[in-house]
Image 1 (cartoon, rainbow, N blue to C red):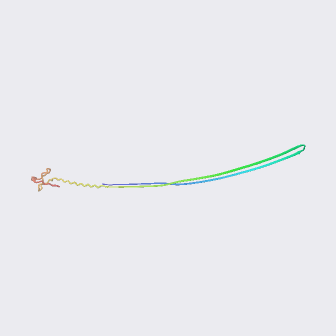
Image 2: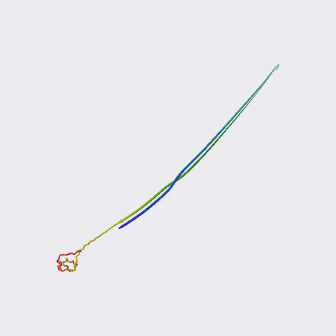
Image 3: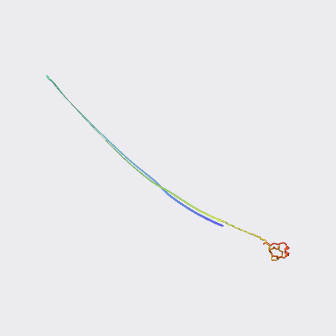
Length: 184
């Protein structure tokens, strides 16, 4: 008995995963602040004071003495006061505020992801089953059968007593002789 079993299994698994991730971040911040402050203060104060005082006093006294007394008193007082006050106040305030704010924000985000996954699975299964069954059966059958042979004629030596199945070929004299067996 000969049994042969041959099993071959070949499995190939190839997985490729390619992921690319690229990240680029560029941030630009440009801030410009321009402040201009111009203050102009001009104050002009002009004061003019003119005082004029004119006093005129005129006194006239005339006395006449006679039988008649006549007195004349003439008093003239003229006072002139002229006051001129001229005040000029000019205030000029000029304020200039110039503010310039320029903000520039530039954000660039570039993301690159690169992932490579290479999986290779190679499975080879080779099964060889060789079964040899050698069965040797040797049967030897030895059968020995002892059967008395009936002689066709009466031999020189008297055979044994003839079995009942045999015809009576032997003379009666041989029946008294000891038996003789033929075996084959």
